[in-house]
Image (cartoon, rainbow, N blue to C red; front, side, top):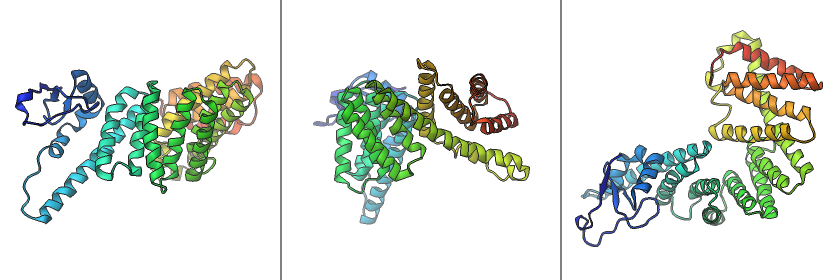
Length: 368
């Protein structure tokens, strides 16, 4: 990483430069692009680790003076080029921030999300619905770091943009209400949290259907709130609902693969993406991992054993790891499922367990 101290007298008279991350007066600039400034080396390093390394050279044409155009047609072309570059960078930085969030790296996500917000505002305007995803990422990262007041500020901005654009999609509204639900849960305002999580479920159901995996997150976080209130029966039923949604989703996918296994002529017809990448996107994989592992841990530690429920969530996780081709983990969870079902005479999953055993045997053994 290259750095260069900013010499005040070297700047044009009256020109001020500000930190890329916090907008404080800058004293350091990137020695690579020479168009990005920071208040201190720590902020420069944070930006570099997050996203600047990927976009350093791409910023130069956006932050240097435009050439003189001798015709309106050329000026229009220049403006279109600038917008095209900003759209590309808005999407790139959004994807980088989202990946950090999936990995639980909340601090690293913030600089990339800030870039995404700035580029999106430049292209679409401050009050457009397009800025909402960036605000939501910043809020999620702030919640993950325990910065509740900062998260609340970002969510207020997102809520304002949604109110200004009534045509905002149910998907965005679902994500907004989920983050608001998590914010109020973190503040201990459980009734307000439940209100927003119920809205999350409603909007997700409108967008994807009532039994889609996208709805499961609202149920899961609602269950956590009820658990914190010691309303254990309600929490238990919601955790069961989450497990059931994922169980049915994975059963359908596993059954599809099992049917192709029975018909060898069809095996080569199915593209590889349909057995891996098309099943779950990164967001769904992260959610499945978080929710199902938390439910399994809670089930196993419950004071009153419920072997059927433990077996079901363990088998659901076994299917999940099989589908993402983590075969060793799938085998481990399948053994746990078989052990519970045999010891506790759990019934109802025998056929599906048998199918997964056959599918795992058909795959090469390798570590993910």
